[in-house]
Length: 554
Image (cartoon, rainbow, N blue to C red; front, side, top):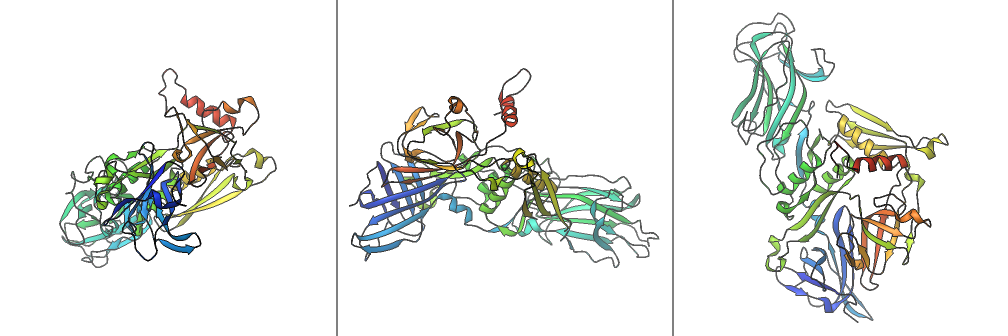
């Protein structure tokens, strides 16, 4: 028997056909996840196996609608179809993946902010004997630096130079936006200069972004696109040069360049180049999300994307060996654990838009702090805890720009571990792509914040209408969305169990995934939560209370 016993409809769209196939659907199951949005869908379709349905095609679209109001409850693109024959007849097994699959479509080098020391190429050999190296700053700062030098006894003239080149942004097909560095010199001498040059490619047009006569005080310039070089430059050269002939008698003819930070030009989520506003050595996770939407993720509706502004400054995010957007978002999740990315339905007039023109709604948001749904345990609940997820120490390893490997250790007080004198330590390797002291410290702090108590994760079965506090109405199981908070009645027996309005890990949970099956009309909600200490809960409450002279935080 075919057809669905819930008010849902299924539509398949390809470049050859656009059909509603609900009457031929035997069963339907779809899944959505908090970090990702619509995830997967499978239908069983009654159709002869010896004929290829024109509405079935790889990369075609699959839609599931709520017939009561026309809303899209799931959408994605078709994958390889399967076929089967049994006593029940001939069936096509059609599977689809959600729009977040687009995150895997392109793998390319990607460099937004880089703090390079190693790997710069020596490109100027006009002056025999001139040296470039990486080592401790001879100016006495104690930092690692790029050292360019005309050694004693090596003749120089008005064309003498020593140049190193950074080209990872050019190799990624991107443009320079900002360069900042600190420099020092071994002597004060106007005949010698420290230069930063922005050029296009290895031999294209060039602009001198900064030229400073040597002095022992040094400087800290931060040239930017448009102001200091023309839009389109993609390669940075750092050099020392001389404008007079002679032979250095001492080894103080050097310039050291440290704290080098190189940034690429970013895009808005709508796809417009950002040519101004580069005033910091760091970027935000929200900047990265917007740039990927405008640069790569053209099947998402970047112009209408909802992107929450994050706060943590990121000083290293460079993938010279190639990366896809999914991997970048996974790294951002390590740094900004309280935010999630999700892709949902396509533009509302999809029926009149060709497949190539469809764009999906996306959001990058913080986990909410107020309860959206209310339900009970009447249909089934399981909430096992796991002490194996409790840690009071973590080590985060990363590769420093000078090539050395460092491990940053973070600790926290965990009463249940301290009471028995137990140390439980996790280990995370963030490599070199996001490897920096600041990022390593942040990743460790975020990890410990999520692993201070045993997670009260579980599953909730939903077989009836659910109270939606945001819309003020009761919604059906297939309408419940992940990435929201749900309060579960009946988990604790005492009267105050239902009082919390924010996530508390005992009655209020994050919904991390929802799976709905049409044949049973039941949704399975995957719950994941960390109980918080009383001290932390009070601190969070205090921050949220409006008081005199204090801006309320949301």
